[in-house]
Length: 346
Image (cartoon, rainbow, N blue to C red):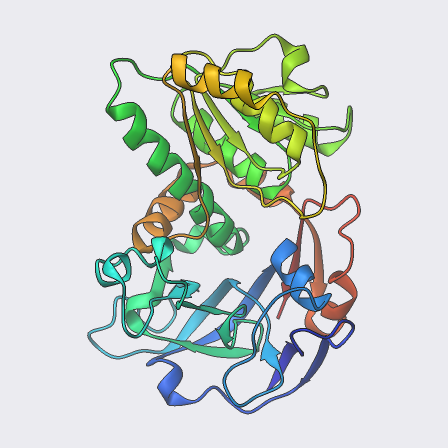
């Protein structure tokens, strides 16, 4: 079978090649791949900046944003032949920390987790793949064209799950949300904000085109300017850019008490001048909360599947701005250009 592979740590090594069928020990559920989403993590691995091959191998099958159809599964599995399915990305440490032992491997404390297509386990970027029954997520058949969005949606589902828990301890419910960044994560974060009934604002740098249109179709408000210039004082900010100045603006501009969730990963090596004293004063005196969120556990995949099912599927499909066949996959591992989400189709 064919697969998209890469040699982690070495730029320019991504290629489509013939590989052996997935071994039975990889999971009792056999799946025929339908689609694979490409994100910044895949591009970093392809650029040699990140990633680990399985032990004893030089190459890794890439891909963690999966969608497929079950070919074979045990009778007691949560999925059956013909089902639409996605695979969970992370696996807990084999000698689990407290969080991994509790099923919250997204919060692994010792960093010894592994991840499909990223860290020490082959990904979902092959024509057929296997997954353990407990890591197979069944999707409604109506999501066949957009179900590949479940993994990025699980990331923001976790963020909103944590935001809900924090606000659940406060004396008021949030009314206004700001999402910084209108890439896939930002737009999906906005979707979940709208589904919660919040007045939602999305900030990005472009002033026209598909992104403002998608935000408008969602029933949210689009801004092509920095948060301080909008005059907004949101109850919640979901930061999806990782841009240093945007991160600090998010922490400085919330209402009291405000909650900021950081989902964007900032590059190293850039310095900013920040009035740390003023920022600390604002966070403390307003009882603000700032936290980071990455990856997702089983619960968040279920929440993501529910959110996608409730959404306008036509709107979701417009997020998938480019679909390419497997043989062209290496060509989309560079800069994304104007695309929102690129999908490899099998």
